Length: 508
Image (cartoon, one colour):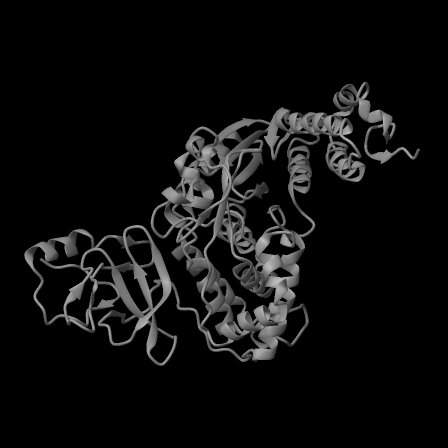
């Protein structure tokens, strides 16, 4: 009986496995498989007893990343977890990854620029203050700032020495607008993620198409809605002709992202841009201003950390029972799934589906195409062309990215009524969805209740109202807003503009 080993050389072969152990070894050898890596759960030889431990249940593979004089870094996996940067005593008999782990061209880590400790310390300081804007009132940031200089110094030093250890995640549930689990990293890990994001985002921004709208400066949901409306008007000659819309939606997108494929895409792109100029007409290339060896180290930390390990469940988790398993990281396949809630995974989601954008634009010649995360539209007058594109996109997603289109949400519809990002686009007008209006009315009712309290916080209420009104003014919802606010007690303390586009506090 033989087992095909792709990247493994077993060091400990002297002791003969028992029949039971051999059977377990073979049956669990597929415990860790992906598009790019296939290892066996070979266990290891214990340095004290000389016996084999965890055969058939764990895989332990030394890597080239150092840790200390006595300990080395290694990859560990079992049926439920993958831990790429563990450390253990070098005297233990672990297996060795003898060739590269990925089928794609290896990421060349030689670089012109090698960051000094002072430069990494400066990057860490900058990244922390960016992260602090959103989480300053949380417990960990407050604890962090008690000894701010020391904590930043410790992070920078561990990164410089390549000894950084990730912390446990927290996870809470949200139900509005849909049930999701949100993972949030420790402030140290979030700081490291911002360092990576700031270093590689300028390169990847150059690779994205104009009509990729998610989590990009100057874009977003409203921009995406306006662009899809523009595509519809352009394709139909301002609604003078009929056209069809291919609605693409991916089933369990974030939980279906294959980390190996994503890592390969990231490395291939960075390698491609390494010797390209940082700006048009410049003689300076990216390799002169970025430490690509350091970037590769950060990518591995950020991407291959297991957020489920020692994860802390925060708040009410009852909504988890009603959430589809395809949307939960707890049920994702080994080697797949990235958590929602980290800045680098917003970028990763765009990087992963940028391959689809390029395929539709270059291979399928889709002129009127736009995408926000996994929600995409392709508009054309030729319905037969859209049918062919639907089949081609499904095959591309399955073969190239290991994703599946949502069977009920992927369809061809008419441009007479198009739903996109919580908006309803119709001939010469657009409305918000019923759920969006329900959230606005709920905000109004909440503010009305707060008026009955002693010393209500009018400024907070004003910010909440203007947030909704500022968004709704871009839609044909004047009558609905007027109907909601006309007889509201809020008009005693707030002055609303004639078109209900903003509110101001009435001075006594």
